[in-house]
Amino acid sequence: MNNFTSDEIYQPEKSSNLPILVAEDIIKIYRTGKIETQALRGVSFTIYEREKLFLIGPSGSGKTTLVNIVAGNVKPTSGKVFWKDLLKDITRSSFEEIIKARRSFAGLISQDTRLVSHLTVKENVELVGYYANLPSSVIKQRSEFLLKFLGIWEKRNKKEDTLSGGEKKRADIAATLVTNPKIIIADEPTGDLDVITANSILDLFDKINQKLHIAMLLCTHSQNVTTRADRVLEIQDGIIIGQHESNLHLRKLEQSRLLEIDRQERIKIPESILDKLDNPKHFEIQIMDGKIVLNPIYKSKHFENKVKKVITCTICGKLAKDNSDFCKYCGATIS
Ligand SMILES: Nc1ncnc2c1ncn2[C@@H]1O[C@H](COP(=O)(O)OP(=O)(O)O)[C@@H](O)[C@H]1O
Ligand SMILES: [Mg+2]
Image (cartoon, protein in one colour):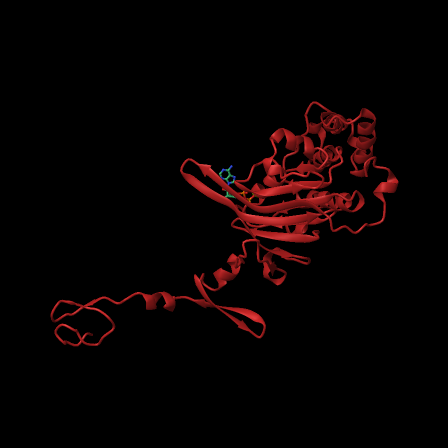
C-alpha cells in the first residue's frame, strides 16, 4: 500500500504466514537501588504479517515492558528481537539505528496522543512525514488519504484543543500511519476513552488491519478489544502462560486457554486455577488415558519421609534416634 492507491487498499485478502516480528527468550530485570524486579522471565512469540495479536494479563504482568522491548524503546536484560527486513537483532542496535528502521516498520500508539498543540490536524500528520524525510508529494497524498480514511478530513484545519477524545485519537493514528508502517504496536490505546468512543476506535483498528493489511500488536485489559483479535497471548508474572484463538471471555479464560510449553520447556499453571485448589506447592504427575493428570499434594509426604525424627528419651535423656519404639540406651518405651 505504498502509495495508498485504491487498488492496493482493496486488493483481495492474501494469506501470509510470514513472520513480521519475532521475540526470543526476552528477560527484563529492573534494578532500582537494591531492589530487583523480574518483569519478564523468558518470553518468546512471533507475529505474522497482517495478524491482529493481542496481549492480555493483569496489571504488573509485564505487558508494557514487553511492547516497549519489541518496539525498540527499551533494551531487554537478555533475549533477541527481529523485525522483518532488518537482518539484525534490534536489541544489539543503537537507538539511532532503531529509530531510523522503525519509521517504515512500526507505528507506536499509546494512551496519550502526541499532537503538537499549535499545529492543525493536517500539519501534525504531515510533520511526521517530514521527520521521516518522505518527499512532500508523498506526504500530501498520504495525509489526505489517511484523514479521509480515518473519518477526520472535516477536522483537518482544527487544532488539538478543539477536538474530542476520539478525534484526537484519529489524528494521532493518521500521524502514525503516514510513514506506512507494517505493524502497529499499541499499549492500552483506548484505556482513557469512554466505551462508545473506544469502540469506534477499535472499529478503525479493524479497518486498518483489513483494508491496509497492517499487522497489530495491542495490549489491553478490555473484553471489547480481545474479541476482535485473531489470536490472544496471555501473560502472567512475566511469562506467557498460553494463547487463545477466539471467543474468549476475560472472566472465563480457562474455557479458551491453550497452555503452552515455552522455549525453556516450562508450563505455567494459571493463578486462578491454583487459587481454586488452595495454592498447592507440589503435584504428583501421571499419564492417564492419554492425559496428563496433576494431583495436588498439600503436605508433601515425599519431603516428610526424608526428615529424620529426632526424639529425646524421657527416661535416660539420651537422643533416641530412628523410628524405633524402644530407647536403644535404656530400653524404655518411646511414646
Ligand atoms: N521502569 C521500571 N522500573 C522498575 N520496575 C518497573 C519499571 N517498569 C515496570 N516495572 C515493574 O515491572 C513489572 C511489570 O510492569 P509492566 O510492564 O508495566 O506491567 P503491565 O503493563 O502488565 O502492568 C511490575 O512489577 C512493575 O512494577
Ligand atoms: Mg501497562
